Length: 206
Image (tube, rainbow, N blue to C red; front, side):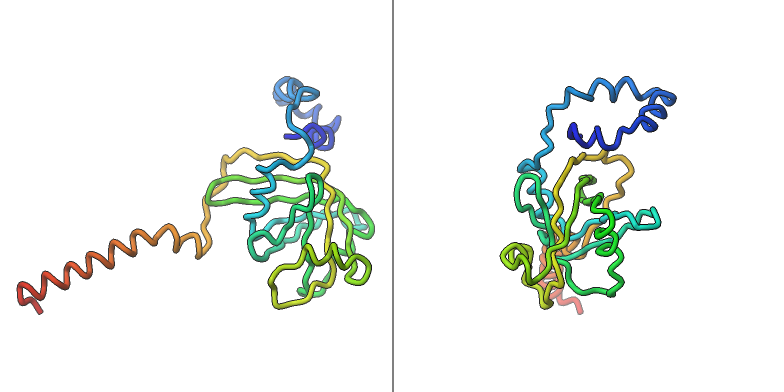
């Protein structure tokens, strides 16, 4: 947990609840003594580069949080520098709820999940939209080999992040991940079937 992340999430009310529940002393020892920098390190950059989805929360003008799932090819969320990430925003259902929310309140929270290895990274930041005609070079950095044209880019200035406890993250696997896991099993089955066919021919079995 980075120092600024602690400063942002451990509000006076949160600290009061921690005190009541007996966890305040443990977290107080971390405050002001965190060795973690607020800048993204190679660890975070590598993790982000292998994600094919994430969840992003924005805040509406009615004060309600709105959580949206974003997906794409692995690495579609780009690390631009040690404090900036971004992604191309392609046309979807055309509700534009997250985009509209950002025009009123630029704060975002991201959850990046790695279900197979039970890891998750939480990010807090300030987001802005990039129009196709105003910053074409920046938008080009966010584009993927995708058969659609980005309507805009979304750039997020990271304020802090935290690696969460793996407890209660149920391992889940994509089809591609399952195929990779089962590849040795499938090869073994194929070898056994071939061996069985040879034995049947040698014994004259039907």
